[in-house]
Length: 237
Image (tube, rainbow, N blue to C red; front, side, top):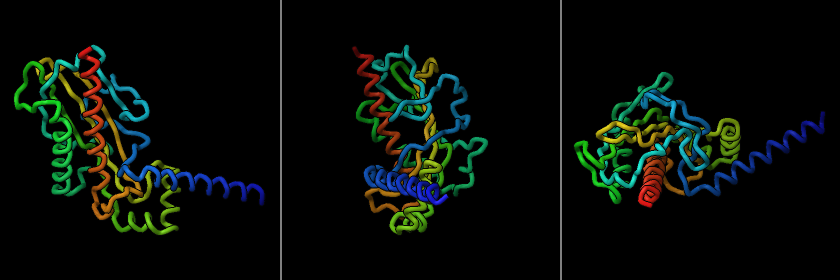
């Protein structure tokens, strides 16, 4: 019995050390991917989506028949807040939701404006982009700070991350998006993803309750930008 208890403690300590070190090493990012994402219903049809590879959205679809090189304009629809069956996002104050919507809209436009012209009407070469925030949980600021810098709190947070995939008190966000041909309505790509805040961000932003959501929005905008660039290159060959 003593041997088993010692072995168990050693395993937990080793795992705890790995989680803490991983958090420190990955400190340049304010979020990390969640273990799962539950479709909210915003996209309607999810039958085309499959599990993404490492570095991709948790669920994704890219139309293999589409030549992305022919699209040089984007009709970006207003960002929606879409509360699915189990989502608690409707309980968030309206002003906070509006702030999140504005941030996602702004960062997506900022990332895509170098490659696309934004337009207000459908037409040839126009991709209609639809985005939704399907879940959001702000960080518990005081607990987040304490569990980041105090040894007992950091240990408990690391154990929670090991068990659930999310550190304690850091916040999380879920989102869905798709692009369709603005004329035919043919789906070009779609994605479902969820991200959680990290403890060690390398930034002085711990008192921003929505830092995890904003960090996720920045990540998603860059991800969409890079994937579209790659698809356009392939279509131009």
